[in-house]
Figure 1 (tube, rainbow, N blue to C red):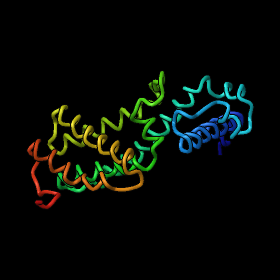
Figure 2 (figure 1 turned 90 degrees about the horizontal axis):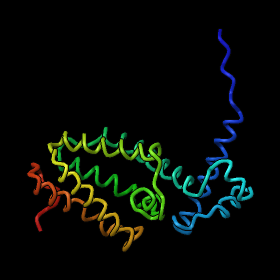
Figure 3 (figure 1 turned 180 degrees about the vertical axis):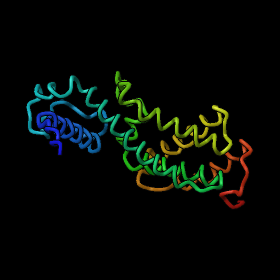
Length: 205
């Protein structure tokens, strides 16, 4: 019987501290806005001096990078699971995907801003943190192609429609559903434009 490998307790403690720092940054971002994160306040929340943060993250943007990667990795996990449960009807599948994205996006303003808007001047995610978002888009493209939508411009339009409605919801009716209610109508308009077969999602006006 082989012995269990030795645990690297130092690495575990270091990772736990990094996790605590990132969680503190999210706490500030959700309370005061994504651009309000400061090293001083992060350090105060985790109980260390500001210079000590540099032994874990080389800059504030490095903390944002970890947050960006976490957010997209979470969405990747959730959307991967969601895509396994899509309805067979193409329009219903499109609506299910759009609702899933809409609900994830509007559930957390700070997270959505970091993931999808250029809210932090000078911040660019690292390749490692950007990778989950690339996989999300690859899954979207594969799914759209399986529904018969192959034109890149059409896929771009679909994502723009979803993002635009999210922006309107967050800006004008946070916590409500004013723009979410438009999703069936928008999907029908899109599906009509790309000649996707019915049945229609929205009754005639």
